[in-house]
Image (cartoon, rainbow, N blue to C red; front, side, top):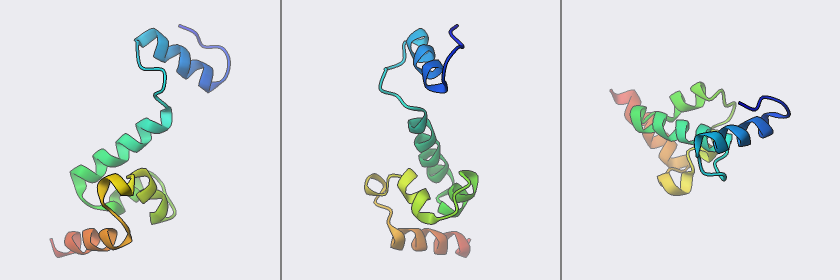
Length: 85
């Protein structure tokens, strides 16, 4: 296994060795984690905390608000729904 160079070099070499599509970025894995966490919890606050975000805008970006149909009002509705449980 190739271990020299930058993290990017290592990531690219590992993807080649594993037969993973070249365009996959480490960032894509973080975004996927955010979506999975939200699908499981339906609580954007938990996603925010687990991803160590200071602002909800960062969390929404990771959740890809356009795909999730989740905007600021959606966050407030999701929080209100969690608080009713």
